[in-house]
Length: 71
Image (tube, rainbow, N blue to C red; front, side, top):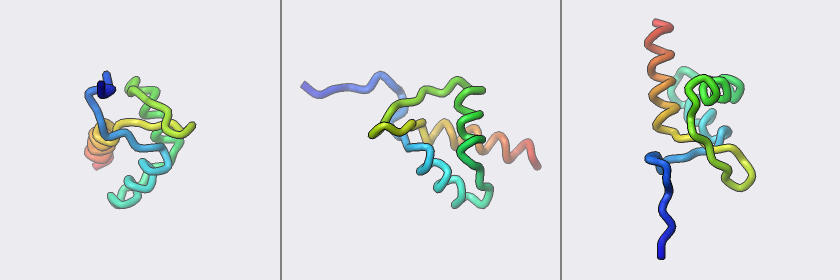
């Protein structure tokens, strides 16, 4: 029997991966900012190999909203 994730997001990335991906957008954010977003928006996290992971889709949505506000 296959295991099924309870999360609607299957695109979890580690925080290091998340920061690296955000650098590619031209609007980089650091790990401290990403951790702040996780806490503020109460994002679901998981542990991958002992590292914290978060949904890349959710981070992208928050990042988009922050950039829009910054003008």
